[in-house]
Length: 527
Image (cartoon, rainbow, N blue to C red; front, side, top):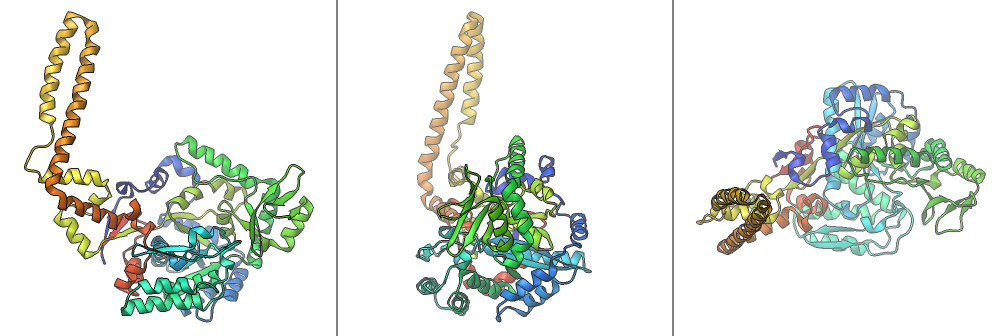
């Protein structure tokens, strides 16, 4: 596998906010802390050496570690006791069978970054961490995956935190996934990985941990499930202050307004209270009602201010941060240097800097995950036979077709020369009209504009007529475009990693880590 880097801006697939962050625009400088440079990482290492919660973190990680956890991962967990050890973290929901490709890309980017940091700072240790979003309750977002134009879905009723869901009824879904994999040594290996993960563990959190560990464990990846009482206790003072004082709402709203004034769109919007109440099969928002009590929506649970603070003190695990507060929780319990995230994640992290400053929590270096598109040998040959490049296919298909026909047509299809002649004639007409009566100028210009539109329509008809002579090639453009952009979006946002695993086996992860360059901030075409 090889990689061709492409500027993110040339892909036409990412938000202006992410593009400007990557390019280091000054308009965003106040919304983050250290830059992703050697100096920035050096400063972040120094500021994180005072991290105090190593014993609690390691104890929690070891308690949930599986007997099947890789030796490398267990070694990294123990290494976190060392004050010279730091983490680089990525996070994601518990997507079924890892969901879309970017799940795998995220983790590969994180591992590669720790390797690069070790090379730059050999006296320190860097542990890659995958933060499982076990408390997320949006089951419909994670209960399916797309594989070879099939959608495999886990059909069941679900409520509460997805990490706590039982996997007792997932057998048929696992079998459906396995049946599509075909027959080969790699398909047998992947079928075995999936079976071990989902049929040998009782909850979706444990199943996901197993799947990720089997794929990435040998690289020392540590998987964290922060739905733990001892970890939540570290956040308890902030939980109490934030619910009662509504600080996150104020700070994030102020920052969001600043971003919007700079021409950017806010990715997330803070609520007055940015915590859910989490218990059994319930994960519901906490709201302050008109009577001054704290209600848990869609339940009969409520608290006064005093009983709420007692509940947080006794059961901090029952308070679940939403998208606004989860990043803060992460940085409280990890000796973290950097967060590796997708475009949308980087965008909402940029809304949080003032909140981190308020609670005096270290803000991590933000690293856009490696984004990539895989092009097979067969597809590559088709692209080059059409005299296109990989970069060409980021354009709209209609533009590609016009470009192809214009290059290959035996006829001259544009009417630029003819229009220049018309334009020259009209300049003379307008001059004559102005001499006769200055008020006739607008009439002449209106006639010229109508003629220009008519010429443009005729040019389009000529192009469309000539396209019939290239029907086969234009059909190939559509087929290639659909392969690279299924459902009209980037391949990585739809396709599961399985087709690539069937092709490369365990080499897939090795190749991704080898080819990804997290600090170069480029889109990768892998071929």
